[in-house]
Length: 223
Image 1 (cartoon, rainbow, N blue to C red):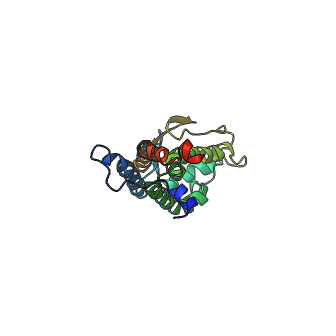
Image 2: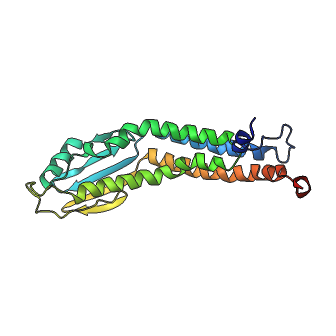
Image 3: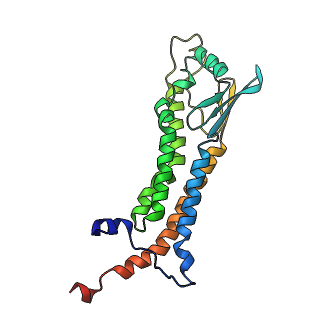
């Protein structure tokens, strides 16, 4: 193994770790593998829900966002949005949705790579999975703000409502409509994967940092 690759991959696990410390080398893989599985399962589940409540819709109108598609009362909501000058929901985050499946699979591979890298570079590999849930909410917020703050002034009811930004989580009011937004089970699982990745990196540092210190040349060896 070349020096550069050895530095990247880090020290190897001792062949015969003693019983007292043997498990410490396996905990990073356990937690990072659980993180990877959480991300994989989240791919098939809803990431976000929003319900619009108003007197004329006693049962509410619902929209559910998966990682790569929208479902629910999209036509009805777009019809209402048309009157206030808001663009159709399907026009939002088209690039993100088209790349989302590949992106999540890439996150899984990076986390898997962190299992086999026993150096500080493992943290870099796991970082995208750690940051993905807040990035998803931030991207959703920016799109909702962009759509709500840039209403078509020529729309029939453009003067009936001021520009707005619905909250991505929690309750908000848009004119006579009440919006209730909540995370889906997919986003919850991705967040669990993020936490598990952090825990895995904690055990990773605990296991492999001593091996790095043992491999450092002693002052006498350097001289």
